[in-house]
Amino acid sequence: MPLEDVRLIDLPKIADPRGNLTFIEGHRHIPFDIQRVYYLYDVPGGAERGGHAHKALHQLIIAMSGSFDVVLNDGKDQKRIHLNRSYVGLYVCPMIWRELDNFSSGSVCMVLASNVYDESDYYRDYTEFLKDIPTT
Image (cartoon, helix red, strand yellow):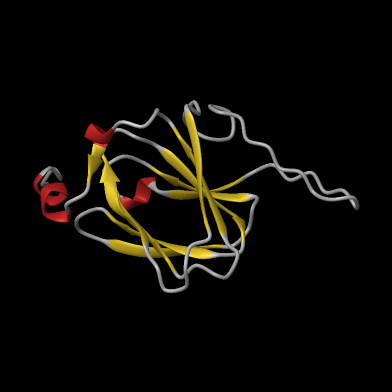
C-alpha cells in the first residue's frame, strides 16, 4: 500500500464549556471495525516505539495527551506526521512500516486496531518487510 493511503482523519468534536467530547464509530468515522484498543504511556524521553509493519491490520493512531511523531515508510517513500490533538487520528493501512518517536512528557498514544493481536501479522524485520513490497 502506498503512503497516499495513509491520512489524517478529523474526528467529531462536541465542544462544551465543561469539557469537550470526541467519539469514534467503526465504519462511520474510520474505515474498519474496531476489534482491539491499546495505548502507550510513560514513554521515556528519547525512546522510540513501533518499528514494525502489519500484513493485514488497519490502525487509527491518536495522541490522547501530549504529542509524538509517527514516521511512515512504504518501502519507497517516507514521511513524518506530528500528532498533538485528541480529535485527529492517523489512519495507517497494512504494509506501512511505522515508528513512533519524539514523545512529549506525559503523552498518551491510543491505537484502535481492526483485528485482535496476532503475532503472525507483524513484520518486525525491515528487510523482510521490503521483500514483500510489490514492485511496480
